[in-house]
Image 1 (cartoon, rainbow, N blue to C red):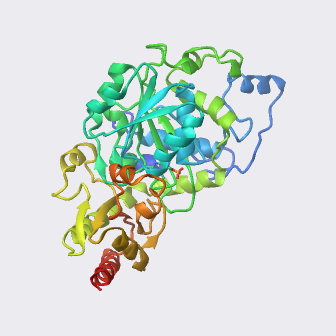
Image 2 (cartoon, protein in one colour):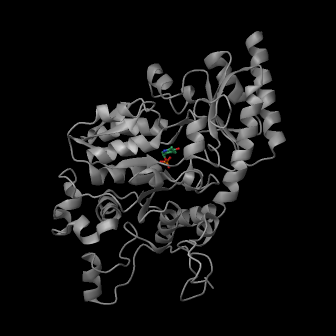
Length: 437
Ligand SMILES: *Cc1c(COP(=O)(O)O)cnc(C)c1O
C-alpha cells in the first residue's frame, strides 16, 4: 500500500502504466476494457435529464464520451501534470477543437512558422474558411510573438521541439508574453512527449498532441488530445465569451463559472466534440493506452539511437549538415538542455549534398528504413519533405519551415543501431555515386 508518510508523487513510469487504469470494478479486468458501445442505458428519466444538463458525470453517446477514451484522457492529463484532457480522432482534430473553443470569425492567433507541415496547411487554408486567421512568426526571437499580437488575437501556438527542423523554442519568455497579453499559450508537444518536456512547468496553458506518433508509438492508430493546465483565468478579460458567457447551445450554461479549472475541457467535449464530431474510436484509445505504458523505455532507446545516427551522419562525406540538438555543433544545444534535459527526441533533419535530386535518391534506396509520412514509430522512418509533406508549400515557405530541397527527415526507431547505420550508409553512398556519374 501507499505509505501515507511518503509525500512523493508517483513517478512518470508508474503513471504511464497506472494513471486512469484502475482494475474494472465489476469484472476485475486488469486492463482497461475496450467499451465498444455507441450508447449507454439511463437509470431513469431524471438520470437522463441530469446527464444531458451536465449535472451528473456519466455516459450518453460515444461521440461525446466513452469509458475507454476517458481512461486515456486521464492518463495523458496525469503525464502532462494537467487538470483534464479531451481525446479525439487525430492531432489535427485536437487543434480544431481547441481553436473552436477560443476563436470567433474575425479572430486570429499567432503561430510559430516552424510547425508540422500539415498544421501550416490547416491553419492557412481550412481555418480561414471558419474566419480564423493566423499570423506566422519566426520563433527565434520571442518578441516576434508579442509584435504580432493585436486586439483580436486569442492564442499563441508553437511546437517546443519543432518538426521538421529539430528547432527548439525558448518557451519561458513566450509564456510570459502570453500571460502579459491575457491569452493562452498552446504547445503542440507531439515531438517531445511529456517524458521529455513538460510545457505546463514553463507556463503553457494548453497542450495538444498527435497521439498517432510517440504516445501510441507503434504506427497503428490515429489519435489526438488537448490537455488543459487548469490555471488559465478565462474571466480576466472579455476575449473568451465562449468560456465566460451563457452558451445558447447549452441552454444558457456558463462553462468557466460551472466547471472552473476543467471548464475548457468540458466545453471542448460537450460542445466542440459534440457538434463537430471527430471522436476517437475506443479500439484506437485502447491501442494508444497500451503504447503509452512503454513510452519511457521506448523514448530512452529512441534518444540513444537518434544520437548515434546524428553523430554518424555528421561524419559522413555525402552529408552537408545535421540539425539535431543533441550534437555539440547545434545552436539549440543550450535550449535543449533546459527544456528537454533527457534529450531532444528522435526526429531530426539533415542536408544531403546534391540537393533535391540527391534527397530523392536517398529515400528511394533505403531498405530497412521505411519511406513514408509518419513519425514516432518503433520502425525507423525517412522522408524527403520537399517532395512530400511540405510539397503544398511554396519554396520560400519550405525553406522558412526547415524543409528546403536538400532536407531529409528521419524518425529514428528502435531497431539494432548497427543495422540502422548500415542502411543509411549504403543509401548515402549510392546517392553520392549517382550524383558523381
Ligand atoms: C502528426 C502531427 C500532427 C497532426 O496529427 P495527426 O494525428 O496526423 O492529425 C500535429 N503536430 C505534429 C507535431 C505532428 O507530428
